[in-house]
Length: 335
Ligand code: ISE
Image 1 (cartoon, helix red, strand yellow):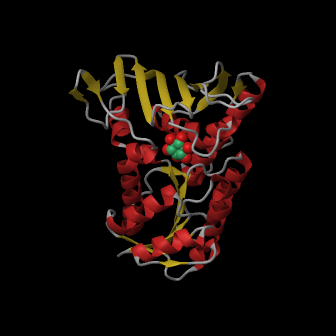
Image 2 (cartoon, rainbow, N blue to C red):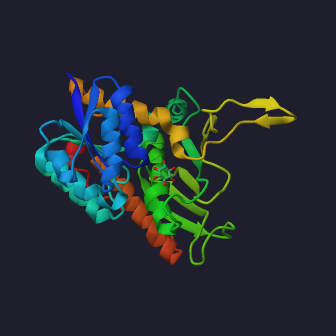
Image 3 (cartoon, rainbow, N blue to C red):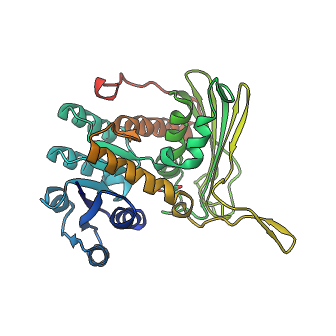
């Protein structure tokens, strides 16, 4: 069986996903595309032998489309995920599920009403070999229970213009998600600290942000979120645990020495660092659809919890206070 995928949004990440699905993921083909820039989706459609359709609703409704990939701007993810749910077509939705927690909750409620898990979230770090290896080191057979996790997330430049709240809901939400997954726990509180900003930071914005969270078991999670770091794209995660430490520097790069310098290059953007994670995520999604096996990766519930935590972080950014995190009851669908 080949899953015919329709892609909504053909910007950087949508284009990368469509090309992966067309040539590097077994069991998938791309049949229809939509982008607000029709010229862009038409060019990609010609490259991939797909059709470019005039609206995203046309992609979802098309009888050439079995499953939908949503890779549009953050603020329309929830609306498009709801449209996918109403047709019963499985959907891979890019993160975040929504910048606003209530919109993410509406998607969870709609999926619970359908009674089947149709939405998988594009938190691709759960498929990254570096994070998978890091997680495998935790626990009694490894370095013990995690006590402190230190994360750095640095972009070369602010991809969509610098806005501190957006850097929580769009960028730090990766750490919010991956640390829940890594330590297998939920957060109890969050506090966002601001300090001296980098040279490119506009007035009234804060960059870097220092996000501190504690999980219900007491694990401390710190995130340095620096979207205008200028140094390139870099993501690191180091765990101090009860019996040892595990460090995921940028393990995906080879270190070379020459001309009295030892080091490794940095990619300009996340596609360089996480290309394989994106491909593995797509393969996991397609294999799940073909075999009917369990859905891998993050669920709509995870997407909602991540948005809720990012919204509490925004509350803390605005007030400077530590903010408690209370989760509603998890619906049985996500048990
Ligand atoms: C972007 O939207 C991503 O998802 C990247 O993975 C992240 O590193 C970047 O900061 C975001 O803007």
